[in-house]
Amino acid sequence: MENINQKVKLDPQLKFKVQRIIALFSFVIFAGKLVAYFLTNSVGILTDALESTVNVTTGVISLYAIYISIKPKDKNHPFGHGKIEFLSASLEGFLIGFAGLIIIFEAIKRLFNPAEVNQLDIGIIIVAAAGILNYLVGWYSIRVGRKNNSIALVSGGKHLQSDTYSSIGLVIGLILLYVTKLAWLDSAIALIFGTIIIITGYKILKETTSNLMDEADFKLIGELGNLLEQNRTEDWIDIHNLKMVKYGASFHITCDLVLPWYMNISFSHSEGAKLKDVIINNFSDDIVFALHTDECHRAFCQHCRKKDCQERKDIFVSDIEFSLENIIKERKENVLTVVE
Image (cartoon, rainbow, N blue to C red; front, top):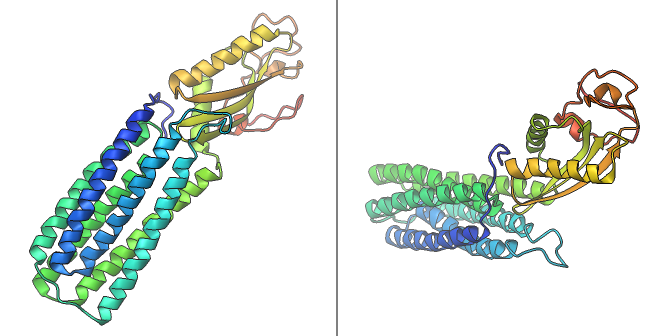
């Protein structure tokens, strides 16, 4: 979730460089786990290795997605190319879930046909080291992703960190297997973490599907309303019909601003520029902003604080608060319904 109280400084090239580092480390980690599997013949370690193949695949896909997403807007893509990050994250969620199904299948097969497990001590050390490295790379990915509004980096980082948590459980399970020599524990470990991997994939798919469907982020819109409330001028009588959608790192915002009816076009343009500056100076540099100005039609006098208005018909009673309920309301002209 973005924080509207912290202005976002975008660095698209940095996102690409970070993803390149993640893809490289994912390959190194996968190679280590593969070595551990061949040394031990443990289906539990195979679980970790199979998930790492997903990390490598999605790392390359995310790298390409970020390369496309940072391209500038063009004639065929007037909103930019940012949506491809959601597609890559969705594919990652699907692949993670698919890997989980394969792991469960292998675990069930091994449960009925146990295989001898060897050199578990070396396998445990490799898995533990890979888990620590995964966590550090995931933390770095999430940190840069949130700073640069990249869902591809954030979802990839969360996946890497979830690997660490599963690695901790896997190490504990492998230690129990090493101590007890109970062969069925190997399959039980794989079943547990195969299920966890499927749940992780589902959560990523759910989040990215919401973004692809342009689902409204009401928490973020509410914070935007609070920001506008704190910076309102006496001429901003009402803001409504506000909509916000995210394309990659870009935010597209539209709204209606009610101003005193007798003001000219130049004044309306000036107030619209003030509104946009408030958002850009406190939220993000990458804003596409479309504003429609409405005249008050003397219907808003009780909610207009302008002191020198010569056209006032009623005394000022209260502001129309720029709350979530009010700013998203689709008002018809001359019809005023305020949520107090």
